[in-house]
Image (cartoon, rainbow, N blue to C red):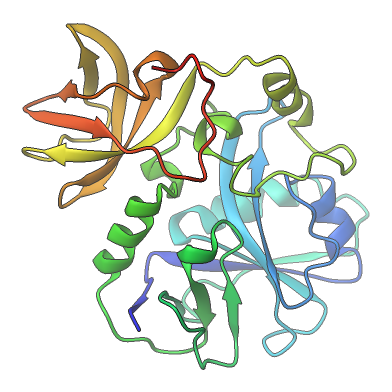
Length: 272
């Protein structure tokens, strides 16, 4: 079964009796009944723009009465600082535990044997996150796996204070609880969905030629229709205008990009 350590991932611990209600008013998904599962959620600006995203889970074996946020290690101090601004009288403690608990991934047909494993809530084929175990493998192998599935990876694929969640598939990938109460940035997120205001999508692409750097313009018949995001070994993600999302071929630097629309992604019929 493929596995890999994820050394670029860290953990933020949110502990205390008010942990769930505190996070519930700030993040995009429902974190009130995690149990042995996970929730993919995002922290937004008051204007509804992406700040960071994480996999939230309970882990009594690590710390009772705590919710952990699995996120890019580089984001952990910033997320602690931002969440702390809203603590007010809430009985919560925020701790950056990155480096204390190893984070890894396992994917394939069978669940891992590790005692502290949580299935990735975005896609069943994404696999499981494993905590506290020293896994063997190449982190680049997991990166190829998530690129093939079309899963975004933090600032490598999104722009802080600019991206909106629906551009990155948060709706189809179960990152938004539409029926829960208010949270920071909810108004723009809901308006984008219900008014059909989305103009761009983060789309998996095959890359023929040298991998373009991030932000390299993507063109179609000479017109700019998007930008390259992360990628490796013939796979990548590109932020494309809707009208280019199903184009047979696009140009990006010296490479040719071919959109590969995954089964989970919903695009309007007019996107062609």
